[in-house]
Image 1 (cartoon, rainbow, N blue to C red):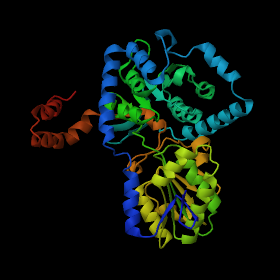
Image 2: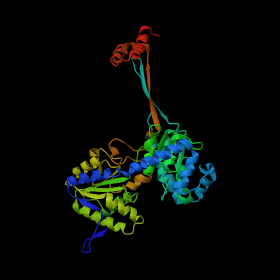
Image 3: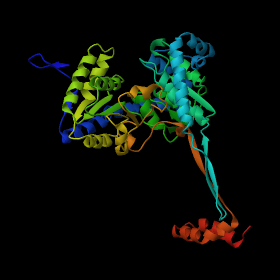
Length: 445
C-alpha cells in the first residue's frame, strides 16, 4: 500500500478503464515468464540433466546436498515403510478425513473421463477401431519447498491410477536441511495408492525419471508442477518422455457484474496471489464502483495476511482491475487472455458459458471460489497457464493413456480401393507402397 501526500491510502490493485491499455497489460501479464534470466537457468538445467544421465544416483545425492542441504545415501533415496506408516500418526483425523473426501471426489470425476476403446465392423469388409492402453510407468513430481501440497499428490496420482498405469513412482524434495517430507504428502500418496516414493526434487528428479538410475526407474510420462528449474527440465526431456504441460505461474481471472460481493472477489484474487510472486490476479467488470470497492478490500485483507510479502508483490506486479463498457467486452478480453482459472461471478453465469472459448477451468457463481477446484470438487487443478488454454486442457486420465488405431481389410475390401492406393502412392513416388498393394491384387489370398 502506498500513501498519497494527503495520507489517503491507495490500493496496490491498479484500475484500468481504457480497452487499449487493458489489452497491453493483459499481454504483459501473459508474457511474465519470458525473462532473459531463463536462458542462464536453461544451461544450468542442461548441466544437471547431463550429470544425472551419466552418473545416476551419485549425481542425485550430490545435487540434493548442494541444493537442499540434505545428506542422502543410495539406501535412503527411497522413503521406507516405517516412515510411511509413521506419517499417519502425524496428521489429524480431520485432515485424514479431508484427504479421503478429496480422494473420493477426484476419483469419481476421473472415472467418468475414461475413454472407451471401440471397434466398428463395416459391411464392406473393413474393420476400424481405436484401442486405449495405459503407459507402463508414470512419474509424478510433487513440489516441496516451504509448503506441502497433498492436493497435488491426489490430482496427479488418482488419474494415473484410474487410467490403469501398472507402476507409478513419486518424487518430492526431501525438505530443506533434512526437515523431511511433510507427513500430509506421504499420507495423501498412500491414500491414492502410491507407495514408491523417492526423496529427490528439482531438475535432478526430472532427470532421474526421464533417464532412470540404479534406484529410480525410467518412466514414460512425467506429470506435476514445480519451480522454473523443474519446468525447464521437463521441457528438455520432452520427446524422450511424455509430459503433462509446461506449467507457468498460477493465474485467476474474475468476471463480475453488479451483484458480485467485493469481499468475496478480493479474497479470490488474494487466494491466487498468495501462491507466488509471479501469480496473476485479474478482475474484469463493467462497474467502476465495484472495481474500486474490490481494490479497497484487497488492501484491507492484506493488512494481516500471513503471506503478505509474497501476496503483496504478486498483486503489485500482476494484479489489475479492468473496467469495461459491457459484460460482452469483459468476455472478449478473457478469451484473449485464456486464463488458467476463470470465475464467472455474475447473476446468470450459465448464460455466458457459450461465449467462453478459452479457459482451463470455469467456476460458475458466487458460491464457487477457485479454491473448491483446487482441493476436492473433482476436476483436476493442474491446468494450462500463460495463454495455453487456447489449445491445451487439464491433466487427466488421458494424460496417462495412448491410443492405437485398429485396421483390418478383407481381400475383397482391399481390391475395391487398391487402385486409389496405387495412384496416391505413385503420386508421392513411393513405388514399394504401391507394389505392396499390387501384389495382393494380383495374387489374392
